[in-house]
Amino acid sequence: DFSRWQLCVLEKLELCAPCFFQSDTSAAAAAMLWEDVVVPFRFLATITQLIGTLTVLLNREPYVVAALPKKYSGDQYEAAHGACTDVLALVLAGLVLELCSLLAGVSFFADRANCLQCFFHVAGTAGITIFSLGSHHFEYLWQLFYLTVLPACLVELCTLLGIFWLRFSVYS
Image 1 (cartoon, one colour):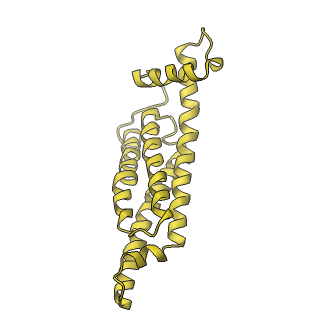
Image 2 (tube, rainbow, N blue to C red; image 1 turned 45 degrees about the vertical axis):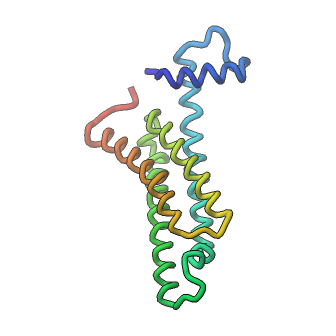
Image 3 (cartoon, rainbow, N blue to C red; image 1 turned 120 degrees about the horizontal axis):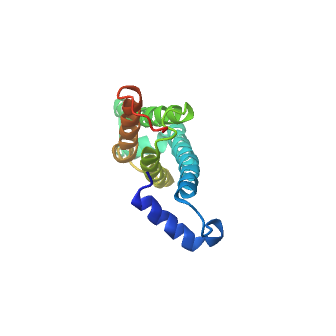
């Protein structure tokens, strides 16, 4: 079933690139075009957020120091460093879970879930990019986790639940 908002997006694309859409384009061909774009875009968006997070993980010193007062002790530094590492580990665990599920082909054909994943990962990529451009307090990563990674993981877990436990088939 091809939803109304997907048809609206395809109509907008037709205005932008009419050479790709002939007058005899059927709904099945339009659906195939949509499916051909969503999964690679989800993969790229997930990978870019993963790379951005790994970049912050490998160079977390400025973000830890930004969270500390001007004069700080070694214990304060260790506590902030541990908290920064914890949030980055959670973000990475969520992204790796989603990426493994996608690469295994489990949620490959769940188009609605893939569209939501694309939205969350594009927002996450933008957030991690903005975060890494300055020396921000690492607590912003928690907000990024709650707004982008956690909802994407919940969508993925609901998809996995539907496939494995409820035996919902998205393939037919």
